[in-house]
Amino acid sequence: MKDETHRSPTAYPAMEAAEVTRLAQRAIAVLAAHGPGRSDGLSHRLVQLCDAFISSDEEPRHEMLQRLRQDGVSTDDIIDHVIPAVARLMGERWFADDISFAHVTIGAARLQEAVRAFGWHDDSRNRAGEDAQAILLVIPRAEHHTLGTFVLADQLRRRGYTVHIAVDRHPRQVAEMLRKRRYVMIGITASGRRTLASARELVDIIRQTVTTVTPVILGGPILDKRLDVLGLTGADHTAADADMALRKCGLLRPGREAPVKVTVNQAGDVSAGGEDRNG
Image (cartoon, rainbow, N blue to C red):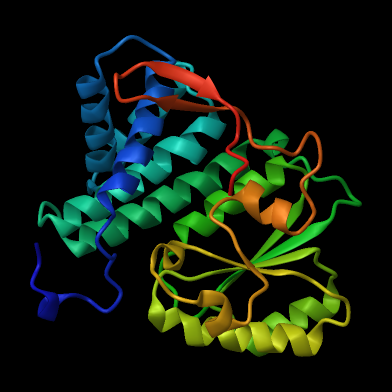
């Protein structure tokens, strides 16, 4: 483990072991559903994906993504399960001194690039009509964890929403966006304490600008910390995923639910189950 005194201020926090295991199992289940293979071999495939995304050579990651598609893994599963698992694995490997923080930064940027590229090259993924309701996702200026927001945006577009993303915008610029368009939900991401002040500033200016009641959702790794994030930021709700956010805003309607999730139990059996509605 790295010495705390030598951490970068933008470094990824330690990943909870249970969270890493959960994401890895979900990704492994997706891979297993599209071809034979032992779980340890599929785990190694995630490591190979991680290595490909931090490599200076572009060819390995393009080849591995193409191989996933050829194996029948859908773009949705790659974005929803495989890419987040690879991102978490990068963070865990950095925390274990297996890779450098520069590797994590480069790898995360490339994972985000892959998510955006899937959207650019496949118009059918954006299912929003001309009269679709709009959602604004805001990444505060102090926030450096952006991959999750782009994954969330892709999921919301698949559910028929128009999604705008405000990255590194001054609160006044966000206010200008709010004056030009009505949004049915505003999401703000935060990974650590240092982002909370920026989130609070954003919530305050949203309240001052928006004339109608628009729910503000706070999400991101900050939810894993034992903090009163609603009290600290003034947001209306917290949410760990797209469906939870939509449900808390009263926007989840039939046909907009997440696809069935594939999971792996402790015995290693693959099974399919519906969305957990207990959140």
